[in-house]
Image (tube, rainbow, N blue to C red; front, side, top):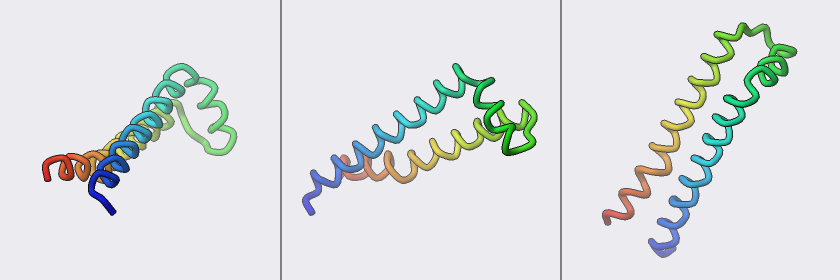
Length: 79
């Protein structure tokens, strides 16, 4: 497989994953109460726990994007 194809693959993976995080954050910010009510039906979560879970999950997801998409892309761009 040509290196240009792999670079393009990692570039699009990074863009798509950051778009997912951005949509998640926007939904979380604008529809916070609705999301909390929806999740509270299934789990006994206070608002503080709900916020903590979402912010932690977003942070872990962003770290995953950095480690598995952005760093390989930068390495391929350097090579």
